[in-house]
Image (cartoon, rainbow, N blue to C red; front, side, top):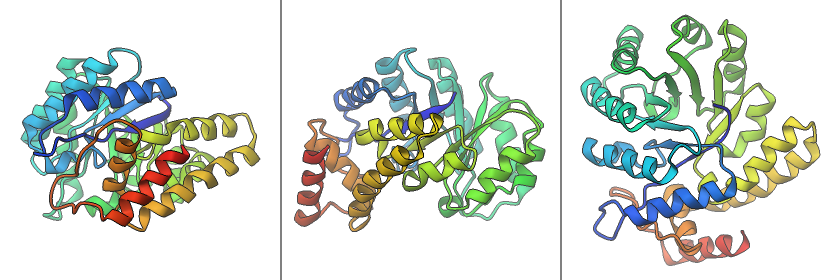
Length: 287
């Protein structure tokens, strides 16, 4: 389970219900681009502003569309351990390859409580766990020492590291005393993550430019850093334009301009301005 994984968007209709047809088209679009796998129901998928049943429905739709063509990771993270377990069991029943979870939010849980949360989830299923290390979103930072202790349990198979701290990414690889998969999380530093030891990357802009990141991954592994850097620069120019506005609605707008209607983001996200939508149309035309 390595390479370039798309953190899937969840297309919605105008009434904010799941757009099943568009979600299946989005999966097929990414498969045609050569994506190595999918990360389903995470931050990009707006999982934390959907109900548990809606998240399970997204798992089902993606599995139907992707089949067994690529590995699937189901993000089951929740502030509630019971809800996370329920989603993990659904993912396992559907045939997902792994589950993932962000640390529980808001209450400032202790590390023993967070570890118990993860142990309870992974003990409820017979598929492995990818820990989602997202300090900026969860308020929880997994240190390399903490991860080394946690990963003595072989049910933990990887880490999605969404952080600017690439030193800690490197330390994960150094201090965990068995092979594990480390995914870089921030798209704009994909190449940096690979250089510091990541085995692949999970990203949101891969929905519409996964082919660029596959080329970065291939060029890096071939030792062609000049090509990898040039493509990362191309991708970052697009990301910089999106950051001027709001990234998730921009990603959905780009996909819609590419012909797959992804609809709006769930509230409290605001709709894009006309200026922003026109900018995203220009990006779509350039791809």
